[in-house]
Length: 93
Image (cartoon, rainbow, N blue to C red; front, side, top):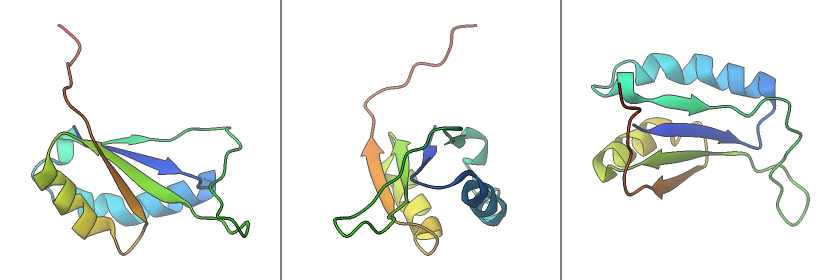
């Protein structure tokens, strides 16, 4: 399940970016497994040493293949960080 987290973005920018990338993500074979992490009402920012805003997208995934696909698809929109996770256990039903 690739998780796409928006880090250092204002809420309006997250909405704008989602409207651009969701149509692209809907073309992927694993589209039903993608989730988004949006932290609302948190006044956090990502800045460099000069104080310039440096928002980015962090993608959590177990699959290097899916990571590469997402990087290729999203690299023209965002700086991207990939975190590879070891295991995921879905909720027992």
